Figure (cartoon, rainbow, N blue to C red):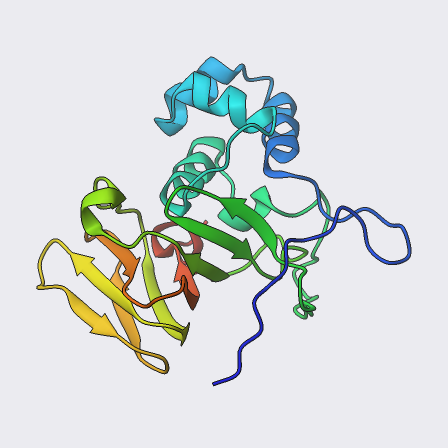
Length: 210
């Protein structure tokens, strides 16, 4: 399978228009719109105030599980953390993501590229992920969050660790669907960093009636 590695997104488009704001800018915008302090967001989300301050100042990225916690704390859909305010009308359901246009969130274990960031109201989050961790001992605690996810291996091989099942190896073309509330982790077991496409659905929020 011939897969191109997604480049880091550029700061602006070819015609000079700025891309969607950073996660830190969106956090500050949403927080101030509610009249909340960082301490209040920390209390509501369960993420420390110092971490949120670093996010706002673009000194830290968040893992997907903390993206979900932050969205819950701000009472927004996770996709709204990556889209400009007022984007994506409910009947405008098309988004084209060109090569290199994902919104990067880089963490110790993964490089997440959030796709279709211009759609602020999505029932699923497509994420193109580079898996960097090679040893489960180095991963840290397994993560868990609301919803469900499907992971499809595009390049390399991964090992899937969950709290209820023995580790399983997935090679190129293999996939796994899991309940995301089950603690889990993905590590690369190939010579290079593995590349996967993830489709995540924070079911508890997006499919409830409002």
